[in-house]
Image (cartoon, rainbow, N blue to C red; front, side, top):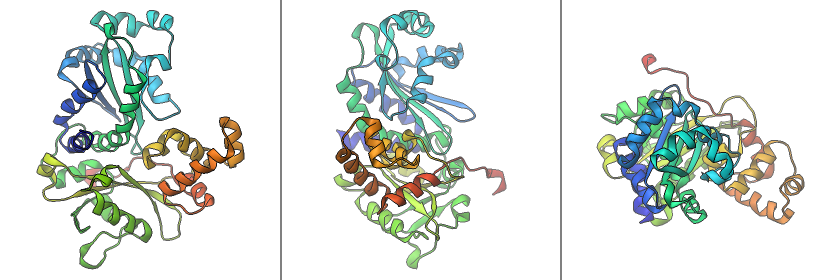
Amino acid sequence: MDSEFIDRIYEASVVPELWPGVLDDMAAMTESRGGLLFSARKVLHWTASDTVREVFVDYVNDGWFQRCSRRVCLMAAEQPGFFTEQDFWTEEELEVDPIYRDFFRPRGLGWSAGTGLRIPSGDSIVFSVERALARGPVEASHVERLNAFRPHLARSALISARLGLQRAEGATEALTALGLPALLLDESGKVVETNVWADDLNLIIPTAGGRFGLEDRPTAERVLNALACLGTPAGAKPVSLPLKDALGSAAGVLHLLPIKRTAQDVFGHAYALAVITPAGRPRAPSGDLLATLFDLTASEARVASGLAAGKTPEQIAADGGVALSTVRTQLRRVLEKTGCNRQAEVVALMAGLAIGPQTRSASSI
């Protein structure tokens, strides 16, 4: 069930009309009434399970979305994950909150589990499942299950958000609409098609036989190895890899997404989509951003954020109230997931990852 569901998540990335079915399954696995996906950059786009669609048409059209404190709390959460009402408010506070008192509860809703995603491209995304008021709060076991799918949801929603939750007619239109450097790869790693942002990116180099290549050769090799595993059970996990320029400085992050099922109607016989979020001016990225980029756990993201802020492992352990050995174990995992060999490399990478949207418009193509 999990592998099939993950395939459907990635299928929905470029076939957005399939999101309601994915949201239905998220609701079913958490004993909820329905699910939601909100995406905002300059314009709000959203979709929902049919079971809650009418409620959220009112939610958006009548101005409740702009006033909702739940969305603000989800986006402001320091740790990545799904959260419930109990993580933010007491029952007394919920009883007098206008959104719950005047909107959700009169409609038989009022319990949820949601997550906010600050996508590197500048998009803000919220997923939630909405449970009937009479059923009671969403249990921790259900939240844990949702968190297992969160990295896949993040990558898929990145693509859907850039497409405005609209299905593209073909590969060229989809790659252009992304507005980020992107390439289509076949199963052997040969580049099938690129967009103008990828063509302009000096990090990508041609190789023999038209195979995918990068200035950052170790990362290119990891991409090809990951590509070979995408069709296996072991390759079901999402792939995000740091990119370095010719001087070894942080240049961005590459996300590799499998092209599944009816998504091939858009991308033809391509096997995978590689999307690059370039780095901007140096700053220390948030834990949530790091977790999204590199599939770090909450504790691993805390370690990476601490290193980026100039803290030593000893200070990170003291601040978190955990043993130094625990921090060192988490640091080893951070090194593995970010493709770094030394702690100093992690610090340099973190300092360079200020991700922002590309500014070149499609009209300049």
